[in-house]
Image 1 (tube, one colour):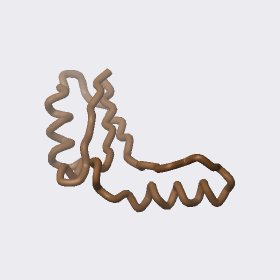
Image 2 (tube, rainbow, N blue to C red):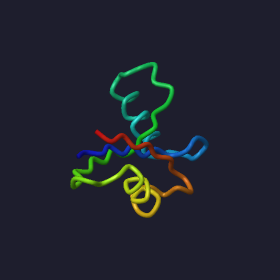
Image 3 (cartoon, one colour):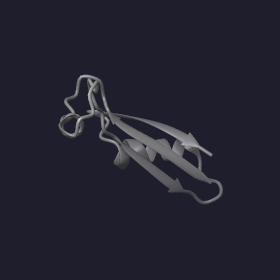
Image 4 (spheres, rainbow, N blue to C red):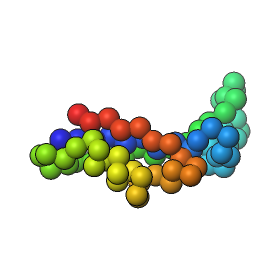
Length: 76
């Protein structure tokens, strides 16, 4: 079983990496980019019987800093 976890900074939290990417793209001639938000994509290869609840607990305890980040989980 595979789980995909997407972690992003919450709205209102400054994203210096995203701002650096936006600035670099502008310097390379890519116009019209008003903002960039950068996040993480984590793929977990899980043993049979693992549950989405377990993946959410992993996010709460390690994979995401829930004070400043939000996450979504997709189990396939």
